[in-house]
Image 1 (cartoon, rainbow, N blue to C red):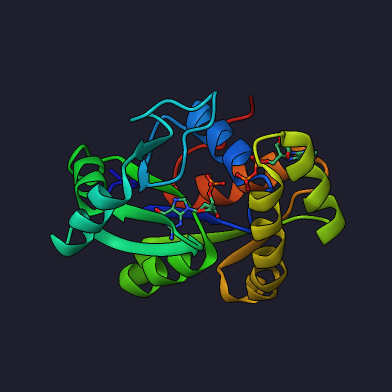
Image 2: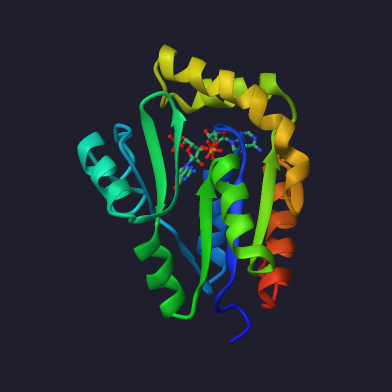
Length: 195
Ligand code: ADP
Ligand code: 5GP
């Protein structure tokens, strides 16, 4: 199969639209499976443990770090840890599916370094920092402190955009979805899906 062993890494600052884009790709490209990350952050009301993330306590997360369970992990925000489990990637690759990741820019760079041409990294660019802030506010998932952490980090993360294989502007969502779809299907060697 052409898609087996391939990794699609979607990255951007929080609020740029990664999750929206990843969900669409998962609904339309049957060859893809999501790498469910682990985190110690609080679960949002709409999120499900084992579907969106594996929600762990800080102690559980640290124990798994010391056991070498993570392919990569980051303290993305102060005291908030996120990581890609080796078991998750191994399981998906053993099913001969391609893996899709929704991770921060540092994690994306680390995966790219580890996997080289086996991985495709796509940076999702918001039209501006102001738009990104608006989207985060409208999403209504963050309290004031968490919102500020994300804005502070986004300024730095936006400067990383040239370090990835592709950059896609997410202004008009439909256009962004169609562009990402073409790039990913071409990388996987599968027909472009159009819904
Ligand atoms: P991320 O996963 O990068 O943090 P999300 O996918 O959660 O970002 O998107 C942040 C918010 O912006 C969500 O409420 C989402 O519905 C909205 N959004 C995503 N793309 C667009 C777009 N092109 N135009 C307007 N709103 C968008
Ligand atoms: P959120 O709390 O909004 O779900 O995610 C915050 C940030 O952590 C986002 O940039 C998200 O992509 C990133 N993230 C999620 N999972 C992982 C992971 O496994 N590793 C890394 N490095 N970052 C992750």
